Length: 397
Image 1 (cartoon, rainbow, N blue to C red):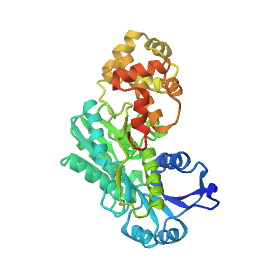
Image 2 (cartoon, helix red, strand yellow; image 1 turned 90 degrees about the vertical axis):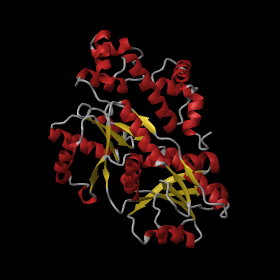
Image 3 (cartoon, rainbow, N blue to C red; image 1 turned 60 degrees about the vertical axis):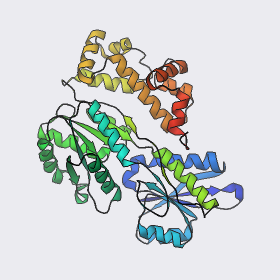
Image 4 (tube, one colour; image 1 turned 45 degrees about the vertical axis):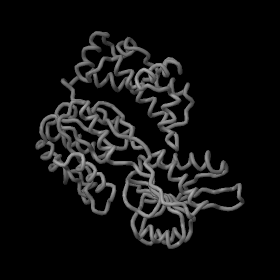
C-alpha cells in the first residue's frame, strides 16, 4: 500500500502538495520516516505546514503517472526508471529514500555495507565464529537484492537462506527447509536476518529442530520493531536504521529542489545504524531462566531500578547469585548490564524523540541529568548534548 501524505502551507494561502510513497511491507518502521518528514516540515521550513494522512492507494503501474499530474514533489522508496522518467518528464521534484545506487534523482540512503559490518561486530562480541544470512530473495524487491549483495560482499562464503516471495505467508511450506538449513550450520554461527519478522521464523523453525537461539546459534534482526523483538525468547537484538533522520533529510532536499530546480543531484548518507542489544546475539554458556527474567525486568523497569540491590530484591534473589548467573550468561556483571541498558535507552530516546535531556535521564533510569552526563562521558567520551547532536542533527554536525 501507498500512503498519501499532503503538506498544506496555509501561510501562503495555497495548497502545497508533496506525495510520500513508501513500501508498506516496512510498515513497523514507516512512522519513523514520517516523523522525520514532519519534523522538517514543522521546524525547518514553514511552521504552518501540517502533515496529514487523508487516504491510501493500492499501488499500480499507472499510479505514478496520475500522481505526477497531481503533486509538485514526491518522497519515495520507489526508484524504477519508469517512475523517475514519469516525474522528470512532468517537471516534478523527486527525493528518494533507500540504499546507494546510481540514479538521476536526489537520494538519502542507508549504507547497507555499514549495516552488515555493524551486525558482524555485534556477533563477534557475542561469541560467534561464523556468520549466516536469512532474508527475502525476490527479483522484484530491490531492497532484498541489495541486502544480499551487501552481505555477500562482506561474507562471500557465508551460508544463506533465501525466503521465496510466494512463501511469505506460508510458514509451514518453508519451515522444513529452514530446519534443514539450521541443522547444516556450523557451531557458533550468528544469523543476520533481513528484518525482524524473518528472525521470528528462525526462532519458530528452531523449535521444530530442537535447537535454541542463544545456545545453538545467535540471531540479529533488522528494523528494531520493539513489540516484536521483546516478545521473542530470548529477546531479539536488532539493528535500527536511521529512518527518522532519513525522512528529515529527504524532506529537506525536496524543499530545496522545489525552491531551486537547477540544483545538482545529491546522494547523502543518513548516518550510522544503531545496535539495539537485547540477548539473542550472545552465546549463553548455560540456559538460565533467572538471567532472562532479570533482563526482561530491567527493560520493563529501567526507570525505577536504581541499583543491583534493587534488581536482586525485585527478583527475590541475592546479589551474589545474580552476579554469578548474569556473568555466566551475558559475560557482564549486573552493574555493567544495567549501565549498558541505560546507555542504550538513552541513545534510543535521543534518536527517536524530542524529550528534554532531564526527561531522557529519568526514563533511562539515571539519578538525574548530571548522573547521565558522567556515565556518557566515561563510556562514550561525550556529553548527552553532543550525543544528541550526532544522533539527531539533520546536518550530522
